[in-house]
Image (cartoon, rainbow, N blue to C red; front, side, top):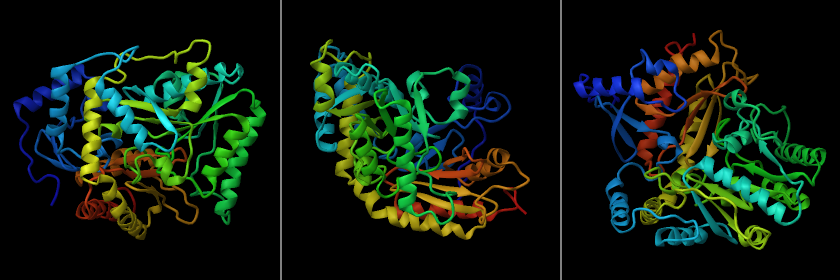
Length: 470
């Protein structure tokens, strides 16, 4: 079954929406061509793991919207009823010196799902705001303890933590941060956990030692009394589903304890089932001081984010000179957003969404590993329902040496071919100049749908002449 099964001629409404969008709507990270000659895909409805556009074309959403529609698209009525009930009772109130039942209930629920001793929850509206909040908690924590020089942060290369000023400063993706520099001073970057393309013969233990030695050397170089916190994603999204090697979590925790550095697990993508656990930290044995979250907490049905921390972090702040966390957001903990999140978590528990990931993750990976039969698939990596394929033209050197530049290949050949197949996924070029295909679908994806997804990838990758190889 192809994606174009229900194609209809453009309606006057569709043509109107095209014109209005191109004239008035500023789209996020969207190339200028989409405001000019390129037809704009306008989505109209969704069901399960599938979405339809205005012309009736059907697509498998292999990216869960933007790594967030964890329960798929079929629960709008149920979550909408929860939001409606809350809106009819108390449509808005602030959490500045007040509280309301949805934020209280949600905070308690998250504390019950979080790792041990992670029991204090602060709500935001997005992942960027969540990481900004964590940076401010860390700064205020050290100030309250008298460590006034601890102002620097460490993050990993090619990491993504958001687009606001502080979060953008943490980003290790130079292609989206450089034009906005100078950014927040005192942010340093270390190697990420990508093992593909590491020196031949290097063991996993040696790779772990290299990563930890680099972090410790940087802390010593900067001055242990100046380093405040380190941000990591349990599974790093940017760079292509990068997982930590054995011993990394334990070693990083030991370094943070040794040098009084607070560790933040950015779980904006990893949280709420993506890796088969409520929080990806559990999967890898990571023991953070702060967890930041967004996206999957309400499955994208409502904007909501936040951070979770402990009494050990908050008590010095609440008992410090200001006796409060000096941060607030108008919409943080919005009652309707919290009601949506509570309904989402209830659905995830009722439908055993995490169990679906656990039952199918090995099957999913094995099917993707089978794509290595293609000459251009160099690496398959990831966990849970988050995987990436790295494409190369030379498997021996693990590099892209085609006469067709990788960016041109992705934007004019690979991306359009995947879209035409009816699979929505991420096609990009990584920091090393090699193309990536990334899939991170709704967590309700069935084995039958896994088969369909992999079949589309197989077909696209098999048509090497059509997508730029001969």
